[in-house]
Length: 407
Image (cartoon, rainbow, N blue to C red):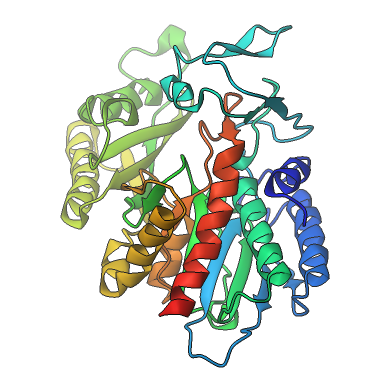
């Protein structure tokens, strides 16, 4: 068997950054990794493994027992975040971590320190995989892919373990919110599934934000500044007025747990026109609706002050809290928790302050909570993952399969 660590170190070499550009469906690097995974799945005996024209990898490990066992799905995503370079990733293995600073890149003085990331101290004496300080690592979600692939390899190497049909999917473009756009739930064939896309060891998540995107357009009037008195309307300054109408303590930097927020992600413009892009997040559906209503009310108030049409807003829902779809089939959460306990992992059930493919898939008829990969500090140069967490995630996947067989 190829180990999960070997697989992970191989997969991170693929440049699979997704793209925010709406005309880019799936990036070429994602297809390269998808083709490689199809070859590996076929070599493991999953003869129907394939990748479609949109970049979705699907495969099925047939049941090896006549016992009625619900088909279980495991899902991870191919892409890495566009927020940080993912090309020429050079992972570094830190053996027997001593609890001190880790110099990722001496030339650029980039240091991974427990002073900044105290969770490092939880891994004294463990082996860590880090970046070299110039790229992200890609544990989100190549760790998940490696863990699923290794679990399948193990099951194929241990035919004595009975199991029902196991459905595998690797999706593109999760990082830009499009991972479920073309997911074929019927063809996938699972009764329920797990995304292997969480963070630190033990994480088990079935609640996520309700999410929307909001685009605010501010229309100004540009006039030569030498003769602008009484004529110029500076869209940048009006945009600033909109920003100040929102509560300053309801931003990502000031919230945690179940607290929602408004997040200004981008601002572009000039005197003539300025555009603000926000994401809006809240766990409670009523609070989520209130946030969207409040945005619209601010627009109405500012138009009343500055003139009709000066401000406009477009709000689009992105995904919803999967809790309502998981709770009616709570056994999938309870059995994941049981699996963790049985392999020596302490479950940490917490809300996702974000979203996964599982959030949308749950509303498409496929209840899909999220389990850990083991990684930390995703999307940046300080990303790292303990090697034992990779191995424990494999154990959890296999144990989930065994629990459902035993039932």
